[in-house]
Length: 390
Ligand SMILES: Nc1nc2c(c(=O)[nH]1)N[C@H]1C(S)=C(S)[C@@H](COP(=O)(O)O)O[C@H]1N2
Ligand SMILES: [Mo]
Image (cartoon, rainbow, N blue to C red; front, top):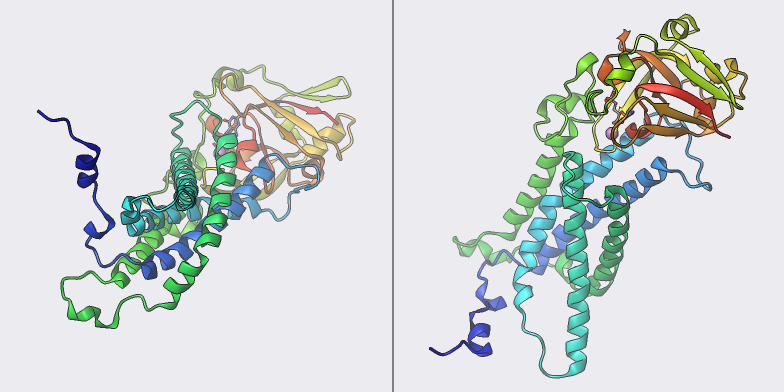
């Protein structure tokens, strides 16, 4: 038996001409590409914003106004990412045959240029697939990896956007030509078997639109019942979904301890208040959203004591930064830091009630933080201590 030669193998690899569908073409690729570029741009900007809101840099003091801002930006982030998935698949399909173009044999220079172009496309495709896949798994709350989601999703975003800009710059003449030409040849209808490019294009846009519509209910109230793709079905005690339960956080024992008392630490002095004492203080009621980084969000009515009142009562300045510590014993997000702009806002509450009832255990009983315009992960539940830290 003869071993296959390189030529034998090469003959088996398809060539671009072997792909028959006439629906492919720059007219289609360019149009889908524009939509994908818009979705990626929106996703990138809202992602940067989320990163900044989670951990505001000193030069960008993000405050409690506008109340619903993070809800809107993070909703857009997740929805633009979802819309990008079908668009990316159609775009990859439309250029797939180009993968099989044989490397130029005429000169080393051409080979190098071709190699560089392919490497940049490799970086773009790889990083785009990574961004959409890791984002999708994140909103499904499935973390089958060891690396930090936030740091990695953020770092790869720069690779994706950088290679996207290079790609657009290199392809600009082709994009112009593709957009300038009619989507289908006017005589297309003469060939009854051919799928029109317009059909593929409309299909791509319709899938993106449908995916958005079926997910948007997790953040847009009147779409809730349509929202079969949404990760949170919107159900939960007291008409609010639960992100992590008290059991999962290992907080049940601390939260149900009858001897519970909140500690307020100001300048080394500690004031303690049990739940009845907290309830006896002046209560405030505000309608504020929980806006989870995973894209779901919901307004609710919260009642409790303003954090600034508690700090003032313990002898602190309401214009201070406050560190919040919870009774949680397992997993991340057991503490958060309230910058002074949030503490000063009288709507930043240590909430005791939700939608007119005492907080349920899973929503943070005996007391939790709720502040306007904060990423959900910083709305710490099962609070045991507030400390003025600067
Ligand atoms: N102590 C503690 N607080 C927490 C969390 C947590 O894991 N531990 N999860 C946060 C996240 S990610 C969100 S979105 C909100 C959700 O609040 P809910 O479960 O009451 O809806 O709580 C936040 N508070
Ligand atoms: Mo969250």
